[in-house]
Length: 252
Ligand SMILES: Cc1cc2nc3c(=O)[nH]c(=O)nc-3n(C[C@H](O)[C@H](O)[C@H](O)COP(=O)(O)OP(=O)(O)OC[C@H]3O[C@@H](n4cnc5c(N)ncnc54)[C@H](O)[C@@H]3O)c2cc1C
Image 1 (tube, rainbow, N blue to C red):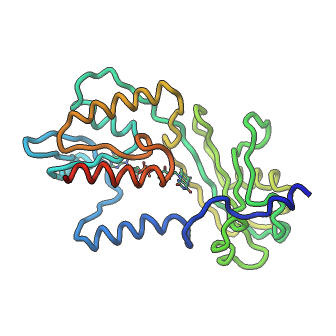
Image 2 (image 1 turned 120 degrees about the vertical axis):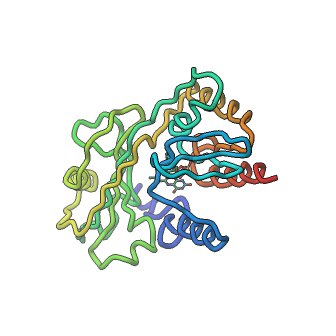
Image 3 (image 1 turned 90 degrees about the horizontal axis):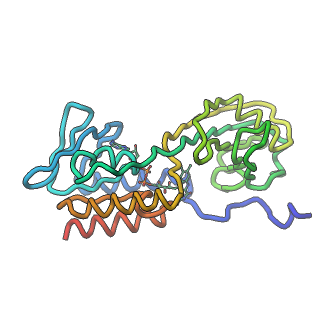
């Protein structure tokens, strides 16, 4: 009866095809405006010039520009700014690793979405290592439309704040999914494991204070601004307007 009061479906919105559509659209707009995007490169060093900034990329090439928007996560920003900012007393932890395992399964027993759109797992469970399970094809109608009858898309999430990184594979996720869903999963048709290092920054007052101190010190650097979730707050509704605002100020 309680289940019937909470039918499967999202409490939030997404784009048809998933949020991946957003960076794709952004890349298309950036290239249409004449800019070049280089992916799979790491900025290893920043240098202040008399009239701007130089970013050393992968120890070899470098890029010069009059203005620089630094949008890496906090720890990488601190590493890059370490030799430029005054004082060396700041430190930021790298954050915990999270892993997502997406499973496409044949499991007609899931047709009725026995756990709705998904569930959270309380910390300390002696058997289940996942912290959350999303029955993605029950949550998103556009995704349900991409699988055949009796097939489902599941996503299991691993990694809690402050916890050491774990090696998680498809078999681990499948075992957790079977337990959490309490239903037979006949076959895994496809699977993808994605690990995000340092994705979970601590949410402590000390961390917020270190971030505020770092952001304050960057304000003294002409032609440079910092943005990203560690400055703006989590979620695209925070990140996108913040990036707009600071980039706008830089170009005025
Ligand atoms: C699984 C997951 C699901 C989420 N779902 C939602 C959602 O549904 N809705 C929502 O609003 N928010 C969601 N969020 C939160 C949202 O994704 C983040 O708040 C947002 O992506 C953060 O953007 P960012 O630009 O600050 O960081 P990121 O997107 O992490 O971008 C930082 C980039 O910096 C790059 N980088 C790091 N170091 C260097 C270096 N030295 N040189 C060059 N590049 C470097 C990294 O490779 C990365 O691409 C989700 C987050 C996760 C992890």
